[in-house]
Image (cartoon, rainbow, N blue to C red; front, side, top):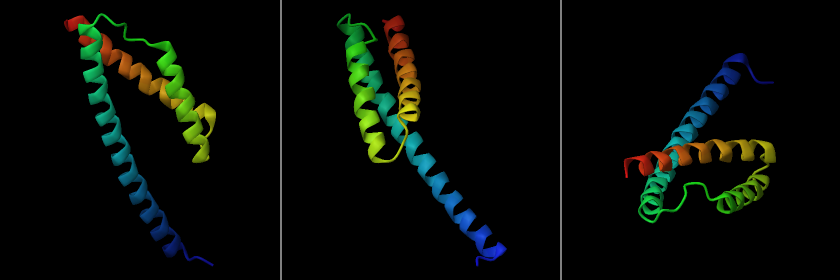
Length: 99
């Protein structure tokens, strides 16, 4: 049986792991959005609309498949990718407006 002190220590260790993983997730999202900026510049220079529905559908489908391998729900992955896509579109539209 785990003591209260042992359980608290395990909780703290796992919370530190989560903090580290959250930091890595944010760094990856930042890197992704920097690539989005490059794409936004290209699209603005070539008069390509920010929204590419077919491409986004592919991204979601690939993400859902990858999420299933990690035992993540389709709903969660879809909502996550929608949020990321919304931010990406905001960035691309901002770039286009500055053109």
